[in-house]
Image (tube, rainbow, N blue to C red; front, side, top):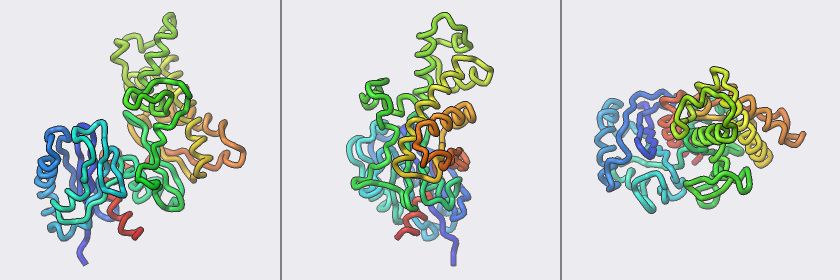
Length: 323
């Protein structure tokens, strides 16, 4: 019997990355195209098709491709559509899975990027063998994927798991993308870390800080991290505050689904213990005793370079194994 492979496609606001993955999670090929070059979705799919042809031939042709998994913002698992994604150039409802299936001639499945990461973690990463866990992606925004009893939670409409947009501080910081106030994403994302740093600097004009060596509007999460590891007090307090907010939010999520683990993924995890320790502390402090010291808080084991491709491709095997 011939080896079968999955294609994984991750569509971001700027770039689309793709690759071919075997059942062990080894990425045999990877590539990328722009997500912004084509206003017409059919032209985008044509470029994607052409870019993948060398890789498909490399594994013996399309007959050796089991299917295509796609992770995308506002991706609806049930309908296979991208719906009103604010950071993509294609507006409205895009029947992407159907269009991809018609173009490539193999089944395609679509979900949002955080759900794809959760499936990838369950297949190949730190959640292997777990039936109950929550994946939290900490990047420019905050995404989540919830797995309970071995199944990803999609909800009745395919959009369950938007934990980043839950309100954690009523009446708090304005989120410009949603106009909501006090959402988790406003505080615990890389964007939120930069905002908190600027806020602290403005609130403490007389306190020295390495952060003052940078233009206020030029401070990003990487600068905050660089200053924190050099011992800067304000930068370290930014992480303490971020961990406090994130830990409080995670305690609510734990009491909702009682997961075995919460797995943190994304660029923010590069801060290591700067973010992990305060998050763990404040999570435990806000849990009922029956939940305390039961939930592992760990970083993803997926290789960052391949994580998006792995997560999307795992959707192919996950569908096969569930049906």
